[in-house]
Amino acid sequence: MKLMLICSATFENNTLSCPAWINGMISQLAFQHDITLFSYGKSDSDTVTFEDNAIGWIDAVSYTDPDRFSELIKKENPDVIVIFGTELKYSLSAVRLCVQANLMDRTALFAQGLACACADHYAEGVPEKVIRRWTIRDVLRRTNLRKEIKNMYKAAAGEKEIIAAAHHFIGRSTLDKAVLRLYNPTAAYYHCNDMLRGGFYEGEWRYEACEPCRIFISQYYYPLKGFHYLLKAAAMLKDKYPRLKIVAAGYNPIEKSVFERELKDSSYIRYVKSLTRQLGLADHVEFAGVLSEKRMKEEYLKANVFVLPSTIENSPNSLAEAMMLGVPCVVADVGGVSDFAGHRKEAFLYPSSSTHLLAHYLDTVFSDPEQASLLGKNAKKRAEIDYDRTTNTAALVQAFQTIAKKS
Image 1 (cartoon, rainbow, N blue to C red):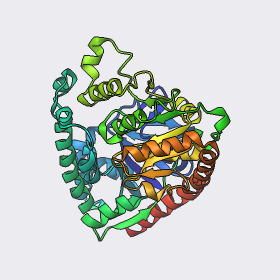
Image 2: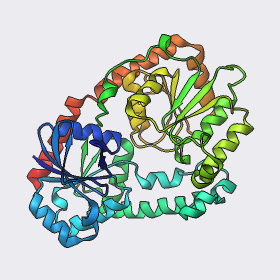
Image 3: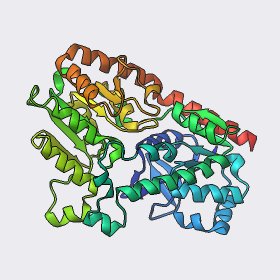
């Protein structure tokens, strides 16, 4: 089968850089299918090698050129076109081109973040003064939190146009199915779970090898990820657990010169640093910087608990990775999360704004290694089923074959 995947990706130094779950998907599909990546990213050639498989590459010049796009479609003649991320600007451009070229009958939309849901929760729990504030970085980039929220609502409007045009929609949660049914009840829905990066299918968390009271959060940079809630919960426990440590992956705002901080610190980052100081957590928070797949896995295994304090999620890849490794998880019960982990079975779930419950479940994990270990083992068993590469690849290929037959 010939597939054209339209997504955000770059290929530099023989490395494909794209969202982890797309990476995992491509690595499985490329063995048996002819794949062309259509991306706004860059590559040195029109063919790249990924995991010993040659895949085509088309850069983004065609997003704004209908004639060029039509020429490429005729040349490539894909059986199925897959557009990743209904919330993204390039997806709206791609859908409009597909509509204009009468290609929607063989085009599948793949759900990612869902702007319709994210817009309402983007800065939940953040003080209004932080939302309105401008840092030097914000001024230079011409955006602050308030403007980011407005832009999210604009993205939601574009997303509704995208969904309304869909004939085929691929998702994996109650949330994305609900959004599709609300804005396009006639489109076909195909349920296909994610495939993870290869390294996360190996290894297993053990309490004896972790660092007690160590919390890992895989993203924190923008408010939707709920880091401010985690800080407030941690402050309730720091006296009981003096060794408590939060390790946050992503941009490190501490190890920067004053000049770099002025250029890179958003209003939310300023708020996070201020809140850390106010709550007496300066010695309990470590910003780990941007982590490779290998380093990310090491941090999961080193942690006593993985926390996902987000205000909204569709199907969080970080939770999938933590569960696959058997890490005890404490997770905000938002969006599609409960489709992947049951409360007190595979994770502790809590209402996203309830910092007291978050603190309570962290306390439970810290104080009861036996229960934490059981939670992790149950999570791994569930993840091995939900993210089985053979099963999920087969479901995805079946969806593509159905779409191709209908076109």
